[in-house]
Image (tube, rainbow, N blue to C red; front, top):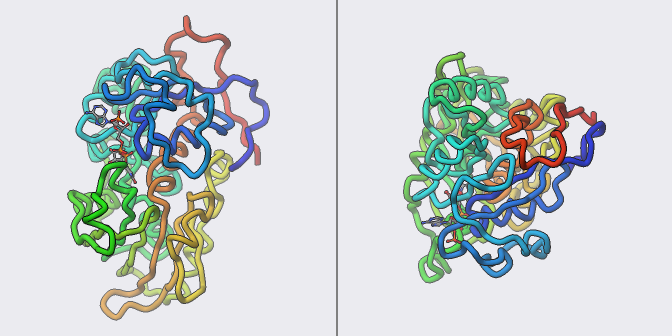
Amino acid sequence: MNPAPCGRDQKRWRAGVLGATGIVGQRLVHLLSHHPWFELTEVAASERSAGRPYAEAVRWHVDAPLPPEAGDLVVKHLEPSLDCDFVFSALDSGVAGHVETEFARADYPVVSNCKNHRMEPDVPLLVPEVNAAHLDALVEQKRRRGWDAGFIVTNPNCSTAGLVLALKPLADAFGLEQVFVVTLQAVSGAGYSGVASLDILGNVVPFISGEEEKMETEPRKLLGAWDGAKFVDAGVRVSAQCTRVPVQDGHLECVSVKLRKKASPADVREALRSFEVSAELASLPTALRHPVVVLDEHDRPQPRRDLNAGNGMAAVVGRVRECHLLDVKFTLLSHNLVRGAAGAALLNAELLAARGWLNADRRPAQREAPLPTEVVSKN
Ligand SMILES: NC(=O)c1ccc[n+]([C@@H]2O[C@H](COP(=O)([O-])OP(=O)(O)OC[C@H]3O[C@@H](n4cnc5c(N)ncnc54)[C@H](OP(=O)(O)O)[C@@H]3O)[C@@H](O)[C@H]2O)c1
C-alpha cells in the first residue's frame, strides 16, 4: 500500500461501513484499520447485529486478527445518523437499494459494492483505472435528485471488476468487438452463508443467479463514456457463462476477445503488460501503477498461488494465445473480495477524496478540526 500523502495534517476522513459484519464488510474493516487517509468510526448491520459490540456480532473470516479498535465499536442500526463523513455499503442487495438512497438523501456520500444502483443513468459504475471520467456524472446525479452533499458511487460485480481491467488496454490499443467469458467463481463471492457445503464440495454449479446478466451489461457501461448528460454504451458484445467452484477466494475467468484491429498474442501480452495508470491514480494509497500482471508460465494464474498479487488489487493474466473462433484468448484471475469488492470500493473512495468529493463539511458541529482541502500527490 502506498504511504500517506505528505502535506496533510493528522485529520483523516471518518468512514462508516454498512453491512460491516458480512464477508465484504469485514474486508473493509480490515483494510480501513491501516489506511492512511480514512478512519473507521462506525459499523452498521442488520437488526440481528445492531446494539452488540462488533467483535461479538461478526464471524471474522479475514486471515488477520480483528482490529481491536473495530472490535470495540457498537454495531449501529442502518439509520442515516452515523458519526462519519461518508459510508461504504456492503449490504445484502435485498436492503441496499433503499438504505443507500436514504443515506445519500441525508447528505452522506455512499460508496457501494451492491448491484442495486449500478446501472442507473446518473450513477457512476466506477473502476478508476478504466473510467475515472465517469465521476463527472455526480454533478448531474445531485442536480436530478436534488441531493446536496450526498451521492452514490458504485463498483462493479466481482467478476466484471477483474475482466474490465484486462479489457481496457485492449479496447484502447486495438478496439474491442466481442468478448466471450466463462467464469470459475469462488464460494466467498456468494457471501457468508451463500452456498451450502453439500452443494459445492466436490462439485461445480453451472449457475449463479443474475451473474451472467451483470457480466454482459456492466462492462458496456464501464468501457463507455459519460457525455455530460448520459452514459454512452461501449457497444462491445459480451457473452458470459458463470459457474461456482469449490475455491475459497479468487475468481478465474477464461476469456476470448474479438478485436477491431488485428493483433497477435504477443501484441496483446504487450498491451496488457504495459498498461499504466495516470499519476493521479498512482498516487492513491490502494492503487497499483500496473494493475494488470501478465504471467508467462503455462499453468498460471491459479487462485491459491496468485490471489494476492498486488495486495489483491491486480488482474492476473496468463495463457495469452490465439483463439480459433475469435482472435485471442487468455485466462484471468482476480481477488473477488479485494479487487472485486472491498479494495475496489476503497480505491473509489480514495479517488473521490483526491478529487474533493468528500470534502464537504456535512455536519460542522461534530467536527473537531477542519478537513484537509487538498490531497498532495506523493509522486
Ligand atoms: N462477496 C463478494 O465477493 C462480493 C463482491 C462484490 C459485491 N458484493 C456485494 O456486496 C454486498 C455484500 O456481500 P457479502 O458477500 O459481504 O454478503 P454477506 O456476507 O451476506 O453480508 C451481508 C451484510 O448485509 C447485512 N444484511 C443482511 N440482510 C440484511 C437485512 N435484511 N437488513 C439489514 N442488513 C442486512 C448483514 O448483516 P448481519 O450480519 O447483521 O445479518 C451483513 O452485514 C452484496 O450486495 C453483494 O452482492 C459481494
